[in-house]
Image (tube, rainbow over all chains, first blue to last red; front, side, top):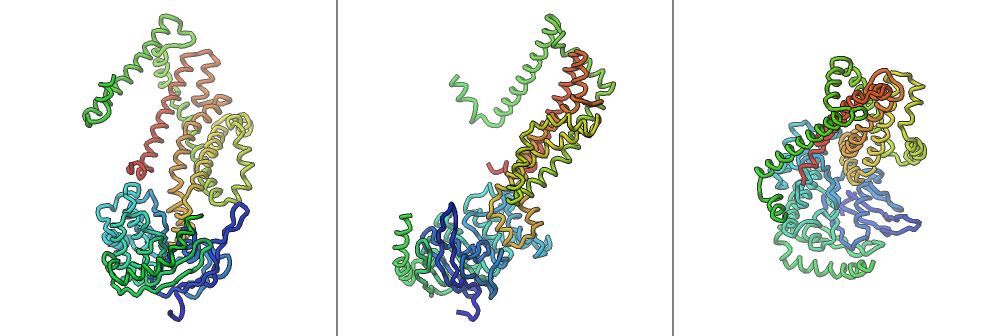
Length: 264
Length: 268
């Protein structure tokens, strides 16, 4: 682990209060994530994985403990992160190109219109949406919208990318394509990534480290480094023996939680 | 029956649809002519006292057109336009402000609901006492009615904005101003527009009702003046001008909506 973690949860927990009752979503949790590390959070529904992302993004404050980013406690929206939520939060009245370029229009970045157009065009090519620049989100398939959302998060090169089941709605083939793209891009741009998923295979394919959560109230059940070498081929890595062993090992940790999780 | 149904909707292509459209247009013209003809005949052969006749109305309209019809029509339209130009921005602003501030919305709710529960056209006599006989009380009445309609729609629109969108923009580093420009206003625009579509006919109602109560000019004034003289032809003539203005406003609103919401139409 590096001297100063990029992102650290220090005994951070989260309770939600609604209709007079308080529900503990996340037990006090400590996680350290190093710069340029790709960490996957795996666990059953309602285990507080998304809460972890929201706390890192500064959208939710921990009930106890704290979240530290670059050595500074997070309070309020964390502008160092790009957040790709489960829903693709595209602006329906903007075309594909205008959605992707959105972050570059903001004053804190001051990108010239020419420069912006060039970077948007590059991004569109990168995520394979050439020819759809002028389409509106309502005219795209779910997979294409996800790619727009990914391009929009990547274009302003946030140093950290938070992703909440970004590919859950995609079909299996497209998901593999997106995995490959994500691996390539995040390594190219030297990003730190926190990736939430249900899918253990997806987690092992992408991550340097997988953290398995228990069912609600969530806490860390297992933590496993993924020693698969980079660059990884998202299409082939899952057929390696090492992958199978990791999957077996982590599945043993996860399966009881999944069974418990379905009772809820 | 079944054969005609099977043949009509699909499979006949653009040529068939164009023919259908021509048929419908022709049908509408024929129906309208029949209605006018029936009216004319009823007036001629039964009794024109209460129903007048299209020919008399046409003659009257031509006479008025050479006289002061333009002044009356312009007065009504100007009252609407000025009322709208106050009521729409005020309603949008208040809707966004209260939509973004739950505390303020909760505090002000009883006042707003109470105020809106008064049938607003009944404010006309009060406004006339306050502002006199000219255009001002009508402008204020239009503005008040339009304000509420736009306000409620904008408010709902702002509250319906996906919180994830707001969070997404905040994380990208948008300032309050940019959040407003790039998210709140465009997201609420569909709601503002539907409010506007409701508000436009109400603006015409408010302006004419105001004129009918006390005025020196305006189409509402023409209506009451004709009615007080039991001049049915003049009454119908005024109503026809109002109808034409109403139709024009509706068409304008539809065109505006189609333009602003083109992202929505192209989807499906």
